[in-house]
Length: 204
Image 1: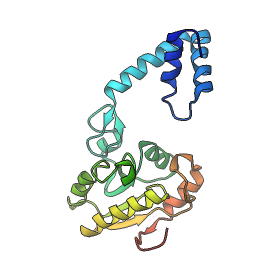
Image 2 (image 1 turned 45 degrees about the vertical axis):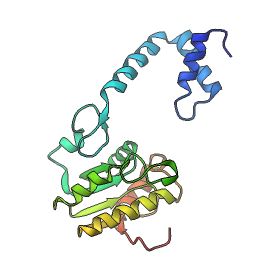
Image 3 (image 1 turned 135 degrees about the vertical axis):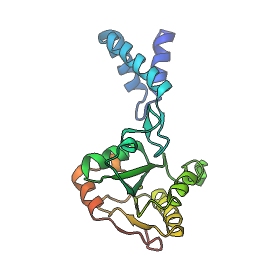
């Protein structure tokens, strides 16, 4: 433990980041204080601004600092195709690895009753309104191939089916238990191009 209360507070603050334990936080804190104070000041300024200004896109729920993200604001995207993902990072992964030109809906998680995450927390009421608009022809389920991701895909497929909308699931070139942000682009591109009709009664 540092003798300085302020340095200790800095280390504790850094530990809010995923994967950052005591030793990593200590290394980060002393690096900024010893070698890169200007970098620390820039980090502080940008972090404070991002915390104040970044919110959710009014259309797809991804993170952005405007009412609509750049993808939702674009006239070049195919409004008949909607890809449903769990996180904003998944949007970036698909954009980088595939030629998909439709639109997105970002759940910001997956169904997890034990954690108190239900349809309302995922914005599925808003998704249902988009499904009812009559604009969509296909919903692509690109939730992670985990138990929770599959349960979420099943729930959304039922919503889409109630509106007579074709539902597909990205092919499982993505390994079971994996997460999109850690999949290499070749595997993700193959899985996305090989998507198939989603059969909710199939075993996981």
